[in-house]
Image 1 (cartoon, rainbow, N blue to C red):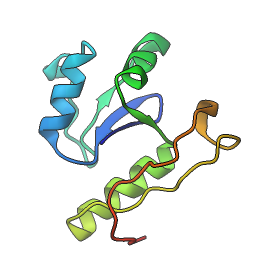
Image 2 (tube, helix red, strand yellow):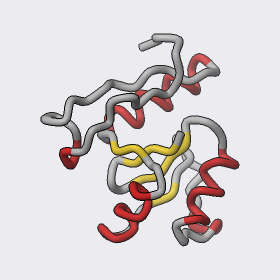
Image 3 (tube, helix red, strand yellow):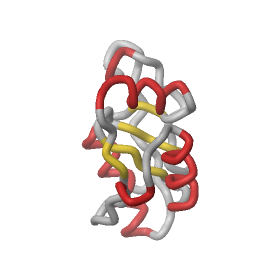
Image 4 (cartoon, one colour):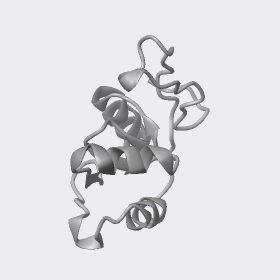
Length: 105
């Protein structure tokens, strides 16, 4: 699953999924940032809209980092917080946003 906080693009599944998705929205591989949380930066609202229209799920930076930090710590993906439409970033419905089903965190 590909997630964005409106500035960063990450995958909860694999780097391959992240690279493929990024290429699909026009990001170059050399823009990949292999830091503590491997990601691509998104530039401008058009790029964010394109990522969302192709299936990236919107979440907060805090939830994005929490989810991926737990994955690194436990070696598997964990549920991210589920937002209601009222509290969801950008007002979109992100019910069904999961990193996996174990329930750590």
